[in-house]
Image (cartoon, rainbow, N blue to C red; front, side, top):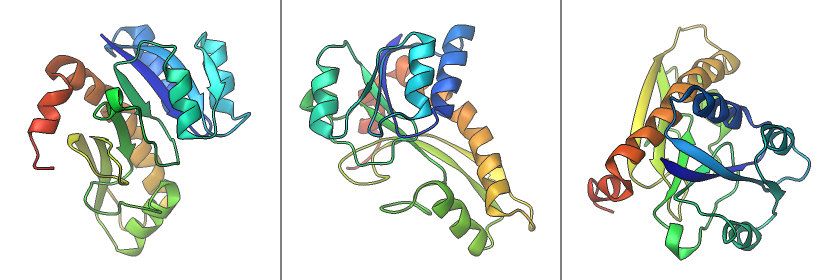
Amino acid sequence: MLKMAVLLSGSGRTLDNFHERIEAGTLAAEIQVVISNVEGVLGLEKARNYGYPAFHAASNDEINTILKDYSVDIVCLAGYLKLYTPPAELARAVINIHPSLIPSFCGDGYYGHHVHEDVKAHGCTVSGCTVHFANEKYDEGPIILQQCVELDYDDDADTIASKVFERECEAFPEAINRVAEKGIEFFWKRVNM
């Protein structure tokens, strides 16, 4: 069972997903703390309603100061829209989900609708999501799990976003379960980084 911190920047849809799956016994994790870099977002309100300690922290240093008070195995970036630099002891334990199949449509500036609009503009017939360990660069780090979705020719960016998010709701918890089963280092040893 992994003890996790959840970092978010918005509504907390991924937090909802984590909470529901933990309650159902299908996610091998416990949420220790929820932190947002944006004050007053719905995700923090949801966290408090679920009974999780919830904080606003604008900088990496503030986040890492809060994390010192909690026993955390992994940090999950759940719609967190800044580059996060963890403390040294968690440097290889930060997990992110990206709304495309990395290495396509990723990197600095590629998040949310920016990704789906570019997928549409390129006429892609598939998209998907990638759960990966994060490092000091956007959308790099060892891949844990990828899932694909088929796109129709007339799908707009909103439809693509909806299809991908539905798949993200399956992929992120499954990836965390795989990390709980195999350990963090298994994934770092799989790649040349």
